[in-house]
Length: 362
Image 1 (cartoon, rainbow, N blue to C red):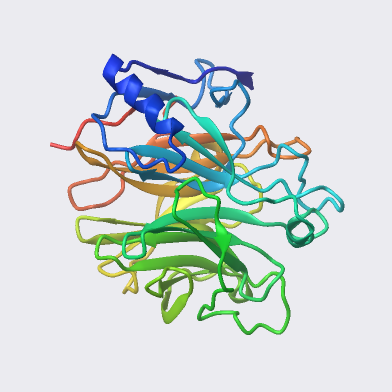
Image 2: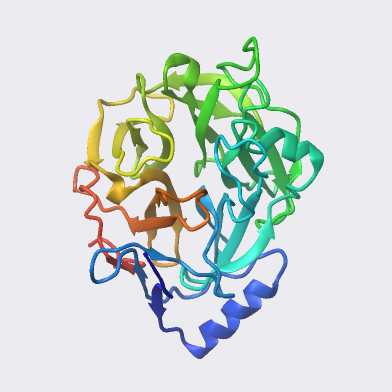
């Protein structure tokens, strides 16, 4: 792997000033600006992974999360490993959940932790002596004007904890423990529910897609309450078994669920498949594969980015750093999805360089 600055870009002087000003605002709420073009570099000229660096020159340390686009600013949310967390290693500390902001998906600024992970409570919930805590996903609730954070935990029965904040970069404050249709009343805490995604639809409703481990890795889609902080009991079971890492999106009247096929913790080269439905609660189609190896990684998210000129569905996979003691230097594959005229997702091409944003579809 090579450490390098991996994105080249050009910004107008006006756009640069606005971008810097937005990054200085604690709220991160900035007016939308004209989208400039940049190049995302996933691999170097020899096909090797590169490490994304933040504006301070440190590797971006946010994994298995998502990218949000709020107020004209991109936010990358993810699990941190830099302090030494190692899955299954007793005594390794919980490093918390980080957020980075960027005006253009180019220059990422470390905005710190979503909440303080150093307390005795969070260390006991999430350190290496437990199964850990993962998968921070943030959505905006326009009715409450709050940003809602879900994380995957294994210290309670339902498998998740929920937080809210008036700002996309936090700090986030924990709310009541959520209730879901599956495993809320499991006999013991532990490996009940796993990887999740939270999706806010344009009609104001929201849904969670989550992995039901007690059903062998079946992905469930459940409608959330009005606050986006708990389930409603309305759900559809979508996949059968041995799947995880779900991601929900909506395009041209069709809902999509992408997921890792099969499931495999920290594995390189798991496939990405998807299903479609006219509603988040189904009926869902049969599976289609769009990548046999997720570009060398494992699918992490699909972010719906409603830009000034067009809407982009940004696919991300985690390129886990195999052989490392932890995943602080793990890389990413990011590229927009493309679609056929019937709505089918084109096979993912695993491009070394990607123009962002892509030109609007004709």
